[in-house]
Amino acid sequence: MQLKENIEPLPSHRYFIGAENDDVVNVGLQAIANGEVALVVLAGGQASRLGSEVPKGMYELPLGIPGINNLFSIQAAQIRALEAHVKDFAKKDVSIPWIVLTSESTDAMTKEFMKKLEKDFSFEEGKIKFVKQSDIQCTDENGQPIKDGDKIMTAPNGNGGFFEAIQPLLPELRSMGIKYFHVYCVDNILCR
Image (cartoon, rainbow, N blue to C red; front, side, top):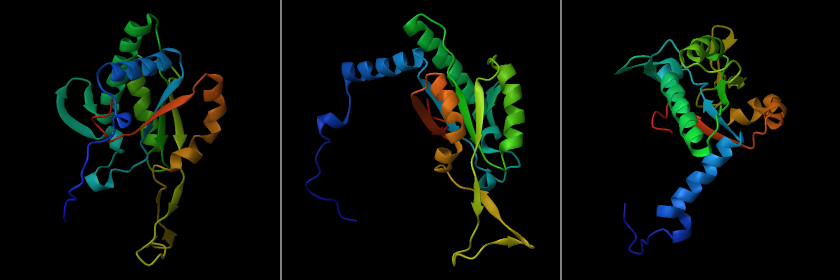
């Protein structure tokens, strides 16, 4: 690999610095305070590469923090912290809707797990909403369906499946005043 000699810094209109960044953050905080933002976690993955029997969001992490030992609980704690931050900013209570994208293989376990999480983090009933992505056929490198006996194997249709899955929930979200989604993957432990 050869580096080009004409490498240049990004133009200043492509990034924020100092006070500009603060302004952008404040716009986001105000949108949250106005009830215009919903969080969306893409959690349809099966954690098969981890060798897990549970969905990725429930995968146990040895963090040593009581009550925060998996990806969903980390995210729930971050949501609570963000709500407190917005309360300080806007001087009013806020509740950010949390939408969880599941799949056929993760839906039941995730919903059951989230009932407990709602209680553990004192989330009001209905804060966590679910949408389920579709499955597609698994194929081999030649495009032929992969079978398990007589049954064709399927898998979740990927992150793009969110756009189809969210459609039935859009009228409710619009009626709530939601204008923006913050979408992130369940296994992005650094997402804030």
